Image (cartoon, rainbow, N blue to C red; front, top):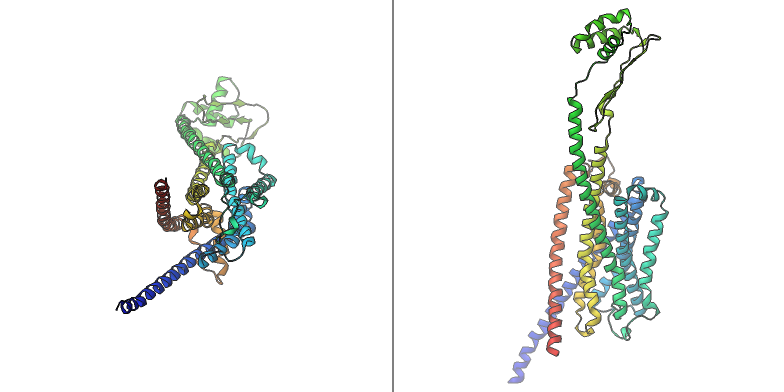
Length: 479
């Protein structure tokens, strides 16, 4: 009877296991599809950045040399690093041999480090451009300095990648069935510091310094704006005299003999300035010759007294041409400072977005990466490590969108390379051509992106925290 009951219970167990296997298979396929979408976004986005810099003359600047280096590193991550990771997720184990495993891990470290160091180089370039605009702009005219910095970025990445090839790895690594990062304690600390923590400290310092400079220049601009308004009111409040009134007064004071056609105007010196201006216009229309008369006015925005130079010459009659400097030709320094301040503010905003995305994507991975040498291999959750690794790679997908939405030149180039390139007839104008369209598109995409990103980050952080608490509790119980 017991045998019959056990035989009756066996089919449901088989059915349940098959259902679980099919569910797991569906989950793997869905995860692979989602990761494939991320790969496509990385490749297409960074390809657009590279083509935009190559085909657009306005984008061939020194700063965009660093942006192009960043895009190349991210593009290589999407082509050579992410697809093997998707295959590894589907198969559940590494089936391509240890030689390809070492090559894949080395490419991962090399390209991700180059991407992070390129972000650091962009931050340093913006910092020098904001804090030392004159001296640094002269040195940046040739792209030799930029190429040198890019070469340093890639050589530093190679130096961080190479040590495991010369024996700096933990023993017994190739005996396991999964392809993972090197867990040698010394190398983990060395690579984490060189690939992430030192560049992160540099970028944080640069961002804080740029923010301080922008705040300081904002205060200076407010002071200059207040000062110029007071000075402008002082200039406007000064009553202007007519040129002919001044010359006539000078003729009377110095007992100079004026021409006959000028006496009528000289007799009106004690009257208001309006009849004098009418007489002047009447005589000037006749193109009558006069002695050389000049009365230039020197305006100033400073609080110094305004001066007017007068002279009268009794040589040859000349056409009377009153000269006066116009207020529109005055110093435009406040407007220039406003434009410079707006550029610096936009630089600070862009760097803040770059810094936020960079730290949010890579910080969880490198914290967990630093803990792996101190945790037994059988207690490290490979699923958490895979999630955190993909979160770091996701930074390669958001970089093109950051620069696209904060650079009008990149937006126009992307529109030209995508939608406008495939239009056979003259279609509607770009939605980015108006400020309202840019604002709406930016707000919608930023809202969608940050909502998805916040959800994924909360899930990953909660699972990571739970895993760490579980490991700590197990170690405390074992002791």
